[in-house]
Image (tube, rainbow, N blue to C red; front, top):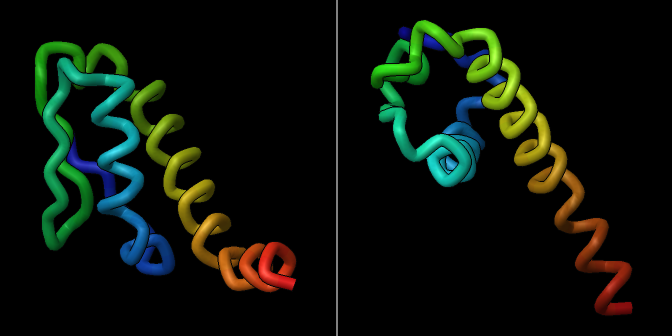
Length: 77
């Protein structure tokens, strides 16, 4: 199953995949030029849940990286 990643999330795809691998260790996730390739026994059965999780992690990682400088200024005074 190939999940196409919006270009604005390509920079955070590796971090999102690392997080989802922890939650779903039975599946294989590989970043390709076309998107994220998901394989394994449950990939097709749980496609909607996997897509939802991956979208959530992509958004979370993007927000984390975009707000990092703000948090650094707050904590460092």
